[in-house]
Image 1 (cartoon, helix red, strand yellow):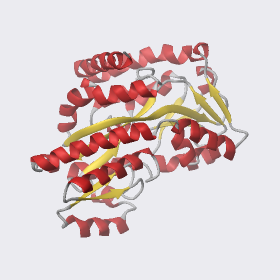
Image 2: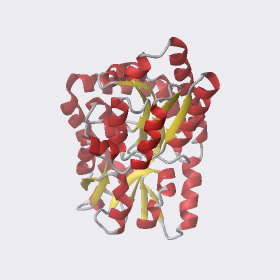
Image 3: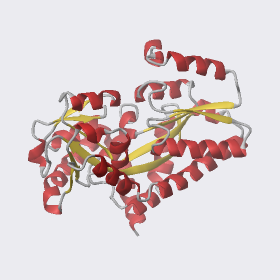
Length: 336
């Protein structure tokens, strides 16, 4: 980790960090979205619960305050941050098994089933714990943020329509494999460069949950929203492990309880969110074309999913295979 990366673009906030570092009762929590987006809402509920049940305060740092996703993860591992919320998409290089959430068509689109799955999954709540701990992180919870939609400049009705399309992806090896399998040209970019990249045609597509398409105004620089049903966006809330292990039992229990309360809150908060935000997009841009692919149109994407799953197992070996099998069993249980 370099000082340059830690402090890039955050000189003003660095002053806040240094001034609060000496305050033992203040914990710092950074996330990848704004205060009004899903991660921000979760963080605010977590903060409310912690502050109501302990003597500690939580200081929240929304997206951009402390740099990009890689920056806040480094700061969490270094103990500069006590808590961080980051998609497994960005932790794939640290924890290859976390890329399992990018195997296409593994996760269902049914939000109620997903809510049961994340809350009760053995893979998430037990198996992933050791993998995160090896990277100096205490995994508190994972939660879904909604079905992922593709936004593009041209219509997408099949894999052929993605041919030669430069499609922005997170810096995640399996997501790169996915869009290669779909026929696109995957182009890893930090989120801060996506709007401008679409505006200048450096890239021609990207994917994100519907609420994020509205809040970030990505619809302004794309003309087509396509639901292929290939994934739901997953995010993970973590604590620095040395910090967490150094807490007394009462504080640890309070953090776990706050995480559970925030999970229940965010699952309820998201009900109907995708539909309401899509309505806002249509109102803001009536010419936007929204397509939900039929089963026949999805066939080529689903066929490609098998290759991506095989690639995941190749990347992660027996450990990844075990995680994948357990996730499938957990999903089956959540469906009942």
